[in-house]
Length: 462
Image (cartoon, rainbow, N blue to C red; front, side, top):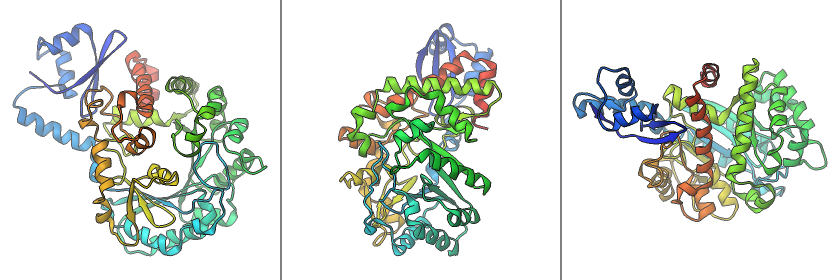
């Protein structure tokens, strides 16, 4: 029998092994030593499990590479899709002043996307090779330019294309009214809003003029539920969040939301400027995450179905052998080759983080503009090549030997913004440390192998 390449790490009294196909296995010390010293009996049960998970193989290396290669291509099929997420930044304006955001409260009408720019952006998006596309409306607050949102939906539907297109709106919902709800419902536009916790926490993170943003959001969510519009929410963790993990989870449940994505701050915009006030260490965030994770598990044991979103992404890789298409947790990352962001002024950026960096005055990850380029030209931009090279974990010194690299990813844009290089030391990189910490929480549960817990975790990615 021959060994395939693998990485390993000791977890308590066992060794966790992973390989490039995203397969994993736990071995005792004795099993691990027999594995690495070629002392396993080909007929024993352990050898069979190792072969099933592509850690061992018999026969020719050529045949194994052909078989494992097919599995690897299936696991990483996101690389063959092209840009499937297209973000339309309809305006730079926003009507809230969240403590961590980069959006502007400047009401200058010149920071809104025009109908002509919108049409050119749609034309480029439709050139992407992916059959399934998501058109996501962002800002600022995109409802401050609802005219262009409406036009993009109508213009897209008027095109002759065999592509399947989903529309999604990312909004704080403060400007939502009956007319907008009717249009969104008729055109099956899903909505993702922000809910940072209970009333106290949400209003502290996301102030809205002199009004109660939480109460307004509560009314809007009720209206959307009545209209049967698909609604989800995202959460951003600030220092204010760290002591209110139960209130956060309970609030999502109270609003009928079954998934919480526990997001760390992105050190861009106001978040970077206010880090001493709202930021935290990796250890502080992971302690907060673990408390939320354990509390959500306990609710599931009580019969209340609820999911933590980052765990779901990783578990899909582990249980379903699907690397998924979450742009920051793939290798290479989804910048440009998986997503594109069309700014209100016609500039095209590799991703949402890149346009946020641009709002801080740095255009390094601008691919070009919608007026003088087509999709293929944008894919040939130097920034696109840089992103792919810098985020291919298999070629990065700090990543290729990491036991978690088959499930992780990196964001060169955030690395550049934080460390002034797209090649930081990943062992010390802030978000990498957070994602590895989340995976450690999950693998500890898999190590414990409690039957009820495993069934709950599997239910999250069915």
